[in-house]
Amino acid sequence: MSEEVNNILNKALINADLNSMQNDVKQSNVPQDWRAKLDIGADGGYFISTPRNANELPDAVELFKDFDLDPKDWVVVSVRKSRWQRYDGEWLEAARVNVKPANQQGPSDIDYDNLVKEISEYEPRKAQPISGPLYAIYAIGDTQYGKDAGGGTEETVKRVLRGLDEAVARHEELLASGRRIGTVVLPQLGDCIEGSTSQNGKVIGRSDLGVTQQVRIGRRLLMAWVKAFAPLCEELIIPVVPGNHDEPHRIMMTDPIDSWQIEVVAAVQDACEMNPAFSHVKFCYPPSDHATLAINLGGTVLGLAHGHQARDMGKWISGQATGRTPVGSADVLMTGHFHHFRADQIGPRLWIQVPAMDGGSAWFRDKSGLESPTGIVSLVVGDGHDPRRDLAVLAGEQRVP
Image 1 (cartoon, one colour):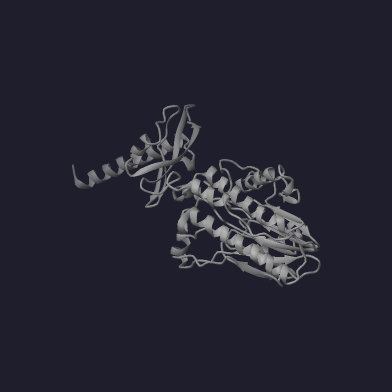
Image 2: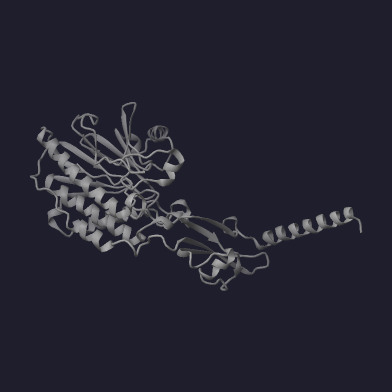
């Protein structure tokens, strides 16, 4: 047989095999998101197993064989499964397995009890409450407890407690300067925890606490802020909006207020309602099916959004104003999400982007070469007071590359 004929036959066989493979995939009705795949780097990742018949899917470690992964090198972080019907009516299953390096720090390695002890032993400065028509705002964003960057959760906790000290000191400065501040506002702008949903779950591989531990740290730290500021004012307001890292899941669409950030604040509210000393602490939540909030502070409307709603927040707030949504009426808009400080004047409206208090992002640093300082934003509003007059960024620290 000639070489030319051999080549023709080989090509025909190859094409037949390819067509057969394509037909198999088509006939199996494998959902696009559940086709076998491996996406793992040095810091972890995930794989999607090859489909098996329903109820025949082995455990996650056994599925390592699909991609020749060594169980000595990798540990399972979480597992999700999917089931669908094949063209002939048979049910198939596949699993998405998130993994991280076996030698990487995990929830069991961090001294969680010591973190809780440190928060519990925090003692705020003592001061007398002052009455008056002004509102002092101390906004903290993107703490992302559980994120292992920049010293991990342990350093983030210390950073937030130092920030609390600076916020109380700033409040005393404002009072000493003659500002008649009767109300303190502590906006919670979302992404209080690292969570398990961002980047298709890949963040789990770089977490030093489990999700429920992250939430408990968030609760205790917010309570520390309440204890510090409650004695200093006639009224303490804690408004909250959900972020993207604090979504509990992304399996299906749910109400945006189904959020770990909302849960953190709600748990602190429950605790405050059990103690008459906190009867002047008020909590504000977005209504169902909303991820933004607007509250009136002595004639100044404060609008809150996490910031993941749009890349161009100036254009976004213009659309909200056109649609006459509550947040569209904001005199001061506060957002987080983008992890760096920014203050813009959008016509008569002041937009403030609050920096993050987490440990930074190696991914962003490698991509851009940049790191942004931490910070808590402080300002005073109400009774005709220009919100730019006392605008300050507290607890600013340069993140170490």
